[in-house]
Amino acid sequence: MAKAKSYFFCGECGYQSSTWLGKCPECGKWNTFSEEVVQAVKSGSSVAKSRVGIGVSKPKPIKEVVASETLRIPTGCGEFDRVLGGGIVPGSLILLGGEPGIGKSTLLLQTALNIPDRRILYVSGEESEQQIKMRADRLGGNGNGNENQNEDTYIVSETVTQRIFEHIEAVKPDILVVDSIQTISTENVDSSAGSISQIRECTTEFQRFAKENAVPVLLVGHITKDGNLAGPKVMEHIVDCVLQFEGDRNYGYRLLRSLKNRFGSTAEIGIFEMQGDGLREVANPSEFLLSQRDENLSGCAVAATLEGVRPMFIEVQSLVSSAVYGTPQRNANGFDFRRLSMLLAVLEKRCGFKLGAKDVFLNIAGGIRVNDPAIDLAVVCSVLSSNVDIPISPRYCFAAEMGLSGEVRPVSRVEHRIAEADRLGFEKIFVSKYNMRGINKKRFGLEIVEVSVIEEVFRALFA
Ligand code: TYD
Ligand code: MG
Image (cartoon, rainbow, N blue to C red; front, side, top):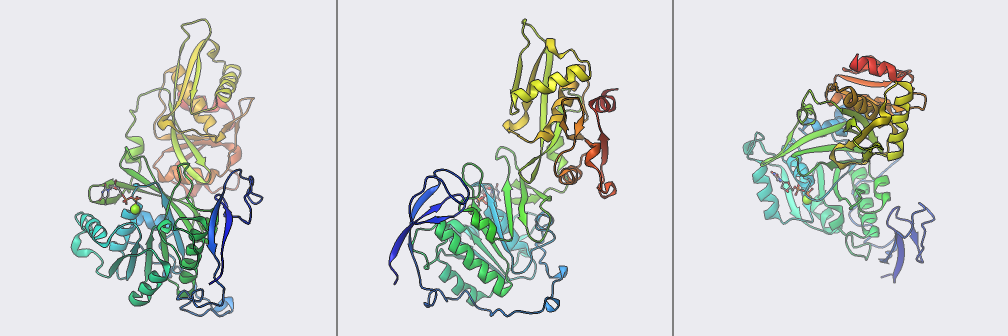
């Protein structure tokens, strides 16, 4: 056996160093290094050559490689397929992240039970076989019907990759599910499960297995407090798809987003509702987004924003009233206060509203904080709506930045936003005229209102 050595790893990007460093030379983050004991295994040893390489790779002319859409495995769940880009691609490695208790295990077990005519091996490092069975029985109670459940679903409770590959040889599954990568360890690395070097090595082993045998592997990954996938970013580079399952636990709905997808668009989202007997697909998402608001409330506007690459629709609420005290009050919750002051100054100058003598309160619903400048137009419209006391239809949304002279400016990834608005069932989206060059509007079912100055928006909404 090789000598155990200890290394320091960056928790952000997985950079390896023999000494502790304050700042990572790779990603530039501070104070991210932690020590891990690593038992190096010589590449020629029997363990390293373990059961991972069942198939043998050989270079082929690209013409001979068969790539056909029909090869995708449909999951039997429309929303899941949509996010994956039309089904699971054989040999792909899919990472499903999400907060604890959001429903990752439920989603994958339900999928494992509903995929038709495939043999599935569901490996859990978190739950015992009895617990998985209890959950499966619970999931069987709904429309899926117990009798329709896939009888070719195998479950095993196991945490060591070498054992898992033994089970794989015995079962020969068409799809492998591993719940979760943080609980799995490999004998090739001598640090505890969940450490950076373990996660990296296990992910690589599963990737090798997936690619060599054309068996898709679905991995569950945990999420840290600040919303990142736990473990190094390198894991996100290794896998083909990174899916994120999220939602507010106070509401029943869950969103499945794709942060990275080598075989499909990341603009798609899947929507589910958590019920007593599992997850139900939500075909018409406006059910929960739009029904929460009355038609005739002034001061509300929906913004089509992006969080990183993820489209997110949020409601901006404003209250404009005559100032009771000499100096008007301004308050912004979840929005940059100085930017609000700037937008109000633009309105004063451009639209002639005497907002200087008004109190203005602004709130982003749901306690979310956004930095996306595309929210500007929704902020302006909600302020105007409250000021004139005329409601904006909850089926309209806005995605544009405001300039200092009152011009409506283009934003990034406008197609993403429009596609999402279309999917969420909005009727109209207001965007900058300069944003629509080279974009095929016929592709979308909703009306795209192109504006160039704030007066146009005002006339369209309130005149
Ligand atoms: P779970 O899939 O265990 O979450 P994760 O694997 O992401 O940690 O989901 C747990 C939650 O889902 C739990 O709080 C109970 C709820 N739940 C239902 O409401 N209905 C169900 O049918 C199931 C299986 C779970
Ligand atoms: Mg779980």
